[in-house]
Image 1 (cartoon, rainbow, N blue to C red):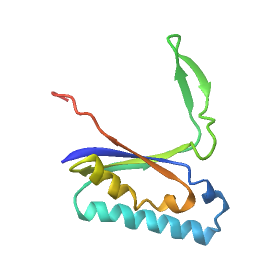
Image 2 (image 1 turned 120 degrees about the vertical axis):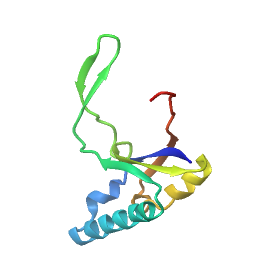
Image 3 (image 1 turned 135 degrees about the vertical axis):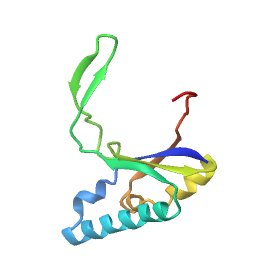
Image 4 (image 1 turned 90 degrees about the vertical axis):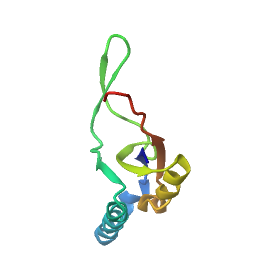
Amino acid sequence: MKDFMFIFRGGSSAANLSPKEMQDNMQQWFAWIDQFKSKNIYVGGEPLLPQGKTVSGSSAVVTDGPFAESKELVGGYIVVKADSLEAATELAKGCPDLQLNGSVEVREVMKFDGM
């Protein structure tokens, strides 16, 4: 099996949720990840805080950010094991934030020999 990273963006409707709806959404996240854990295909992951810095260019210029539109803001990631990109993509279709107009980018993690 290979490792695949799910990068979560958007879910901008989450800001409009009531406290109960937010709690329900979190429970959906826990249940979704628990499915991966029960199959031994969950590697790890974390949500990300919205604040950060961006370092860019050969001069390593530091700016506040990211300041992407909320639909583009990366909210977190997880890494799961799957046999193929297609299989990982099928797993990503269960992401709770898809119901909130979020998106999941699915990327295979490149392995280097000796690392």
